Image 1 (cartoon, one colour):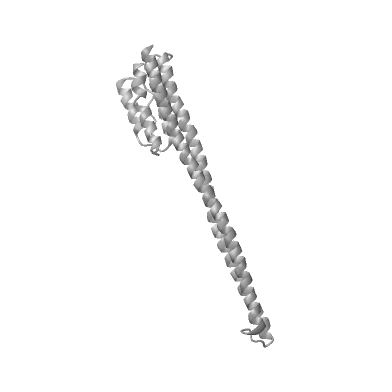
Image 2 (cartoon, one colour; image 1 turned 135 degrees about the vertical axis):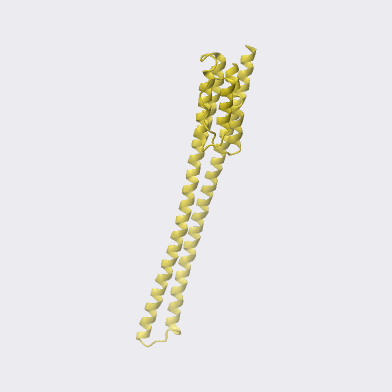
Length: 222
């Protein structure tokens, strides 16, 4: 058990800490035997800052393979402790996939919200342009008949056109605000799900640490 324990024991706590604190991935560790030199190399590889979860999984997998090569591939201790590392890999990858999917949903909702704002502004611009055309047409008609557009029926008609456009704007703004509120809520919920998935990653690694300790004790008592 000596080579395996020396290789895996420094690795799993660091991985759990990195995931729990939301840090980046860790660089992959070399698949070498469980000597003192390879233990240092594995620890350095896994604690170095990397670009994502995939290097963490690769590091744990390679550490497990390197540990198994260090002291009898099919010994009970090697199989138990290598299994602990591979279980941690599974938890990391599963949590990463869930977090990425949730983050994608949040980004999609935010994109839809941005599109809704642009659409609402475009609809309002169209309404105002239509109102100006309507008022211009009214003035032209009444002016051709020699009627003062500033008093009487022309003024009343213009006021009615303006009021109708205002009501349309108010209704559209209320509906748009409701859609934006729903999209904002969807984005916040998706980001919360992503956070829970990352916590699940840390929990999975912590569970692997517990298993590692239990297996170590069992092997020591055997």
